[in-house]
Structures are given as C-alpha cells and as structure tokens.
Amino acid sequence: MAEVGIDGIEIRTGKLKLDLAETFAPAQGDDPEKFTKGLGLYTSSFPDVYEDIVTMAANASHRLLDRKDLSLEDIGRIDVATESAFDKSKPVSTYVAGCLEQVFEDDLHHANKGERKFACVAGTQALDDAYNWIRAGRNQGRKALVIATDTALYERDDPGESTQGAGAVAMLIDENPDLVAFSDAQGYGSADETDFLKPNQQFPSVDGKRSMQVYLARMREAMEDFERNGGDTHPDNFALIPFHTPFPGMVRRAAALGFRHCIRGTEVEEEVADEIGHQPREESFDSHDEFLEAQKEYTETLTETEMYSQWYAQTIEPTLAISRYVGNWYTGSVHIARAAGLQEALEEGRDLTGRQLLVGSYGSGAQAEIHAETIQPGWEDELGQLNIDEQIENRRDISFDEYEQIHDVHNHAESIEMDPLTTPEGEFVFDGWGRMGERK
Ligand code: CAA
View (cartoon, rainbow, N blue to C red):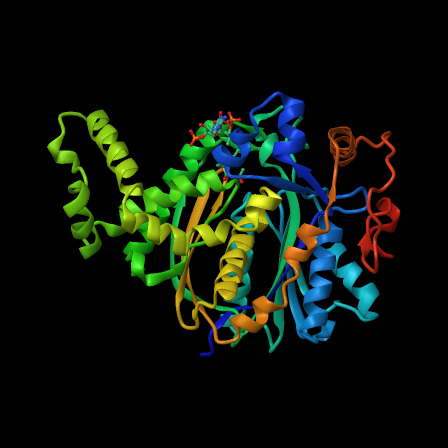
C-alpha cells in the first residue's frame, strides 16, 4: 500500500501584530524579558476585523488548492479542527467549503465534512482521521483537506493573555505525499482534566501553572505508550521534534524531560554519565519526593551539557522559529512547529529526505499524542512555496489602544464598531453573519 501523509501545507496568519516587549509589557507594567526570555515570545498575531477562523481557513485552503493545481472534484473530505467554533451544529468546514465553492465556481457536494474537537490536539486527530479514511480505501482516489484554525484569545488580564495568537494551517492529505508520510506507530496519554476549558464561554478558564504540569504528564505517558507500541525514541533517530507550542518556554521544559526519558538505557546515557553521573533511580531514595527532587536536579544539569545543547539546537530550536512571532494558534500550533523546523532546515541546506520527525501533539482536557513521520523527497519544493515569513513581516503593528479595541471586537461585542486596520486584497473577508466569506 502506498504511503499516506501530508502532501502540501499552507499557513495563514492574522494580519495584525502585537509586540509583546514594546507594546504589551509597558502597558501591563511588566518586564519585557518576562515574555521574550521567560516565555520565549516576541510578538503575537491577531485577526483584523474582517478576519476570523473561517476566512483564515478559507484563504489558506484556497492558496493550497490553487498552488497544487487541484479542483474541488479532487477533494473528498474536509475536516476543520478548532477550539474557536461559533456554531454548535453546523461544522466550520461547511462555511469554509462555501467560500471555496464561490471562488472555484464549482461545488463540494460530494465531500464528507466535519469538525474535530479536542482542544489543540484536534488538528492531529483530524490528520489521523484523514489517514485512516485513505488507508481504508474509502477516499475513492480523492484527497482530504484538514484545516486547523483558531483565534486563541484569553480574557483581558488573564495570565494567558501574553500567549495569544490567531492563524490557520491547511494541510492536504494524500497517497504518495510530497512532504511527510505517517507511520502506524502512535502513543497516547489521556486523562479527564479541568485545567483549561471553555464550557459555553467565549474565553477559556485556565489554571495556567497546572496546565503546564498536565501537558508534561500526558506527554510522558504518550511517549511511554509510543514505546510500548513499537516506537523507537532514541534521540539520534529524529531530525526534528515538533511539539505543541503554546509558547516556546513550554517546549523548553518538555524537551528536557523528553531527552532525559529517551536516553535511558542507551549509549547516550553512558556518555552523559561520564560527565554528570547516572540518572537517579527511585529505589535509591527513601521517599518519592526525594527522588523527584534528585530527578529535577539531574534534568537541570543535563540541559547544561554539550550533548544536550547540540541535540536541542538541531531538533527543537528550529521548530520554534515561527511560534516566537505568532503566539499560540491552538490546533495549528504543532503544525506550524513542523513547518518552521523544516523551513529552517531548508535554509540551512540540511539533507532530510528519508529522516524521521517525532511529532508531539497536545490538547488540554487532556490528551497527548506521539507519532513519527518520514520526510519525503518533495519536501524542499513544498516548503519553498510557503510565504509565512513574508506574511509575518507584513503584519500591521498595533498600538495598545488598537489592541484593546480589536480584542473587544473579537469578543463578539457587537455594539463595538471598528474600522479595519489593513486592506483585504483578493481574499475572503468576514462581513457580517449574512455575508460570511465574501471574497474581496
Ligand atoms: N526575565 C526573565 N524571565 C522572567 C521574568 C523576567 N523579568 N519574569 C518572569 N520570567 C519567567 C518566569 O521565571 C517563568 O519562567 P519559568 O516557567 O521557566 O520559571 C516565565 O517567565 C513565565 O513567568 P510566570 O510563570 O510568572 O508567568 P505567568 O504567571 O504570567 O504565567 C503561564 C505563565 C502560566 C504560561 C500563562 O501565560 C498561562 O496561563 N498561559 C495559558 C495556558 C498555557 O499556555 N498553558 C500551557 C500548557 S496547556 C497547553 O499547552 C494547551 C494550550 O495551548 C493552552
């Protein structure tokens, strides 16, 4: 059976930029380094008044289909993953399909459409669904369009406010893919958690510190499950390791714990042991708390070794290159991490064809998924077509007053009128509920 995976990808950022160090920090009375050094974020993306999850998704999808020279007839399935849905019945994919039908002057009546929800991991779950649909032979030769789209906004003055972002990632899933092929091995870590939730509310209720602990716990479980299912996690196996990135500081923590876990019992652990000693083993301690303290100290020392620094610089750091400038995109976050890592590798001229990615997806509530992907021969051409750096560069830098207004507008405060800050050019715009997705 042919390989199945991601054949093409397009990324669409919101057109506005909030500078965390220059604009947000002074207005909040915070030290800018809390964001740039502590969280690892410099700027975040926001949607202008005519952008929302549908327009960003439709604009990304349109460019993807156009670039791949596809017609709507070629698409048999559209799944949208989002935690920002505005409709409890009609899936966001139907709105996106409506936009595409307008511009292609054709219909998608034959396509199976749906919406996937499990916080940020839903984008990866939608990829899994598309993979299974194709592997089962139900696609009848057609391809699947998977779109992860979110406006990741928090209540004003919530600690999460500095990690906001907005954007969409459209991915084409097909046989003999140009970008990456999925493998069958997967691992899950899942538990009923209440650290981050949005029950019938516009903004999430978040216990931020706890959410970080839950992320790490579920990711560790998923890693163990992946190994039980035959996945090999030796750190040298992977060219890049894209993680779900709510902010780069979170990935810094996950990477340290992941590396400690993956070197256990390998020759890498022996090499590291010559420098900093062996990993603490629970049986050597009188109490679990003492063991945890020793493990924490070992991890900190481990991150200071040359071996760790080199591994981090090669496999993790490149995946954060986009996230630092756009913030959290929830369902799209791990997919921009994959794209960023490959884009950086392309710029550095790394030869990655046939190498593996280890992808760590996570959604609050909570579930982590680990899976491996193999980089395909067409990856350089495919990545070379992305224009996300240009989009990031062209965003309109907003003042704090404008930020406050735009936040209110996207809070569905319908009485608030605001003129657009940018001009749409040949793209879908949100122009009121009756005229969703009109193209300007
Ligand atoms: N200079 C340098 N560093 C500084 C600093 C300064 N002046 N001031 C603070 N820092 C550091 C802190 O030491 C801290 O780093 P460490 O965690 O490494 O110690 C970092 O900056 C952040 O500082 P605080 O912890 O004080 O920040 P905070 O109280 O504002 O909260 C947060 C941070 C909990 C992540 C908050 O932004 C939040 O709630 N975010 C939303 C929830 C979230 O993203 N959770 C992540 C896991 S859940 C998930 O991944 C799903 C999802 O997408 C939401």
